[in-house]
Structure formats: structure tokens, C-alpha cells
Length: 253
Image (cartoon, one colour):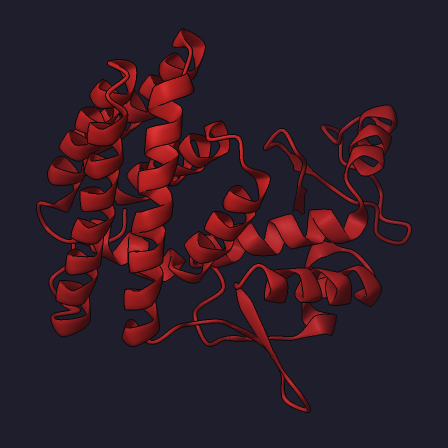
């Protein structure tokens, strides 16, 4: 089953299968397919599965098996694989196939350093230009983090955390920056969840987000940028602790 743009499942027709009683109306399915090409829908679903850990790091992705799983032909799957390689989530090896990508700690180190610089720049820009509706949207994401911390729900926190930083960079208004940032985030996806799964990491992380948002709301550009830089570098340090002591994490909920 593929995900539509609004987050609801949209079943794609396969052969002569009888539609379910609660299946989407044909006009709604057509609208989804018109606004999202089939390869893009396949890419979005595979991306969701990789980021959720349903497709493990290092796993080989079989084109035929994925096509059967999602109820599509192999062509859209092949196109989705190419797009996922460009976004940094898979690697294509000649004569071997497609694999979910994992990066070495040394490369992750470099990415965290670059991300810290990009986040600092974005924080400065947003603090200078954010309007109340922007701050409200960011505040809603931080409040989601608060609720996840109260439940010790790493997965929900991780999703809200990704949304906060992506929204922040998008608000900076630089398309090239956003595209570069998103690729870096994809490459770090496994490390980022693992850093949050450490005991005590969620409360510390959410305090940092509150501080960042307070500085943005106050229009303190330099302070907001610096807070973001330090936040990312703190995540890098937590990543090193995970790499050195991988067992010191809380269990996935």
C-alpha cells in the first residue's frame, strides 16, 4: 500500500483484485495519482520504510519483490531507486544490486559539522524574518516533542524533531540550502534516531529546542544561530557515544 501526499494509505489497483469495502473512491485515487507520479509515490513509501527502520541498513532491495509488495510494475520501482540514490538513502552497486545505505562514523562526523554550519545560517535567517505564524508552526512541533518526552516515545520525538529542523531550514527561503540539507539528513537518519534513544537524551534535546525557538521568536539572530550550531554539535557528540557504546540505548517503542 502506498502513502498519498496527505499521509493516508492509498491502495493501488493490482490486476483484477476486488476493491475493499472501505477502499478510496476512484476519483480520489485518480486525484492522488495525478498530483503524484507513480515513481514518486513508490519513492515516498520506500523512504518512509527506510527511515522507520522497516528496511534495515545494508539490506538488499529486490526490484521484483518491492514491486509485488507495493502492487506496481518494476519500472516505477527502478526510477524510485535512482531517486533514492540521489537523496542518499540507497547505494546502487553495479552487478550487485541496490542496498539501503549506511555511512561510516568518520563520514557522519563530517556531515554533522557541515549540518551545524547550515543550521546556524538557517537559524539566523529565520530569526530575522519569521512572522508569528511561522513561530506558531514551529512551536506546535516542539509541543509534540514535549508530549513524546512525557511518554518516552523515541519514534514520535524523532518524527517531530525531523519536522522541526526541516521546517526551520525551509523557512530560510533558500531552495539549494534545503535540498542540500535534506540529503545530509537522509544520510544521517540511522545515527540521528540512535542518538535520541540514549537514556536522558530526549529531555536534554527538547530543552535545546525550546531555547532555539525562544531566541528565534525574540529575533535574536546571532544567538539563535549559535544555539542551533551547538545543538547539532551536541548531537554529534551523542552519536560518538552511541558508536562507542551501542548497547546504551532505550528500547524502541
